[in-house]
Amino acid sequence: LPSIGSGNQRIVDVIARNLGNGTFELITDHGAVADLTGDVTYPAGGQPFDFDNDGRVDVIVGTRTNANMGQQGVMGHLNLFRNVVTNGNSYLIVKVPLAINGFTTMDALLELQTSRGSFYRRVGSVGEGRASSYINHVHFGLGQGTTLASLQLTLIQGGSPIVRSLASVPVNSLYELIP
Image 1 (tube, helix red, strand yellow):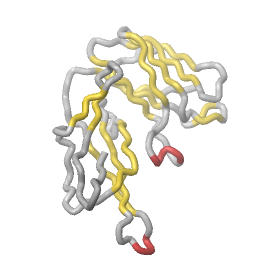
Image 2 (cartoon, rainbow, N blue to C red):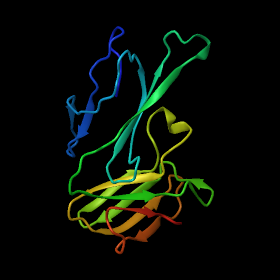
Image 3 (cartoon, rainbow, N blue to C red):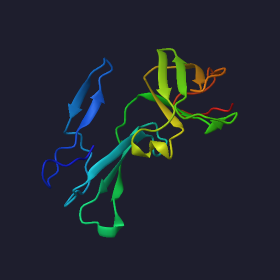
Image 4 (spheres, rainbow, N blue to C red):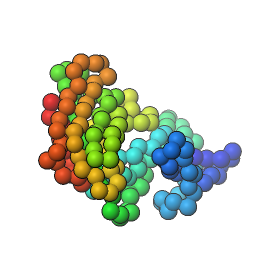
């Protein structure tokens, strides 16, 4: 995430890449760049999500600045970093309803069963904006040669899980979960 150093200078933007074994690799030569001339901002949060539903996870970073703002208070802007990498990996995006039987789906647990094992995701967003909104499109990166089996949604409030067979659902698609 963008941040500032000890003075009015930017420090290097770092992306932490999950290696899948409980560790992360810090990457600084990621190529995620924008015109940052004169930009002295404070990070307000980053949100990974598939902005254009192409199966590649993009990142939006919100920043704020409060220097010399006077009566205007804290202001900031959003930077969208689009993922342009192409590879042979598969994905599934699950669109979850905002509420089920009057209960929010925020923080619900999705379990996707595939030919390569189970994948787990929470419904919702991260960062400061989490309290007022969330993203109900949940992205599963599946790698290559994966077939889908089933999907289970468990609400944080409890109750019976919702289970759906996905045997006829193709990978590289958007699946809308209907309660």
